[in-house]
Length: 145
Image (cartoon, rainbow, N blue to C red):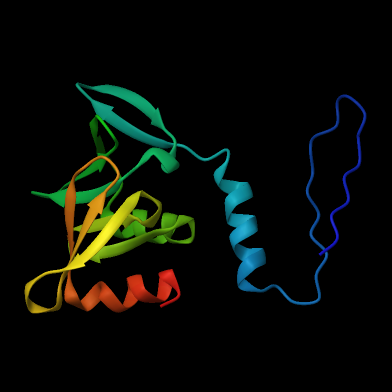
């Protein structure tokens, strides 16, 4: 792959042009990463809105018709629905781990099997999240197993 960088004059907006024979998965991931650098989530604590970088999110969870954003030390409420989050952040390494949970693969420290074909993911912050057996194949595919 050839990379070319051009300096532009002041006042012009940065622009990225991708020339390719075929748009494959690696290019789609690159495009998603580039777009993600400017994308922020809005999380709410005590009626205050906070800007959250999606890379800081460990997982999203739906509880009693509310969606929560779990970061390393804080938990925020989101106005987005779980299916909206799944569609928006799937290409960022998030995946549906259970009916009510979307997990960030980059925050998984280890995975171990538990009863009935489920997995238990130990996250970098010490929390444990279960991966439902119906979503285990999705995780394996994302990990290339």
